Length: 56
Image (cartoon, rainbow, N blue to C red; front, top):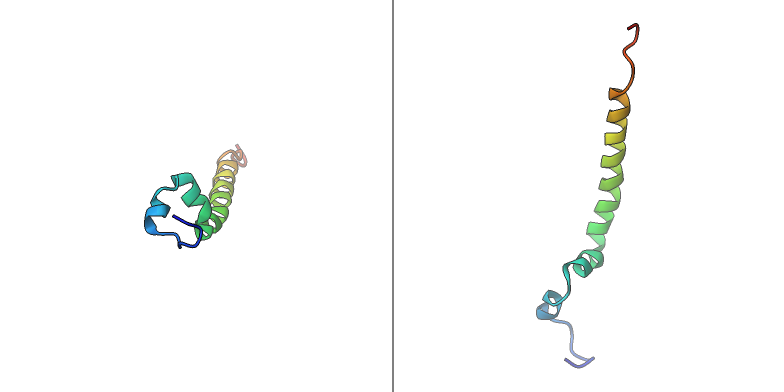
């Protein structure tokens, strides 16, 4: 392949899976919203579960 040739699907399949994930901006955007959201939700639920029972 010369520099003037456009990339083909075969070229994309040669990339490692990590590079394909890092090249997908929408996946990175979704992960940057979902991962902190799930972690904060789990943290909040854990904190609620650890609250002492009132009056006991």
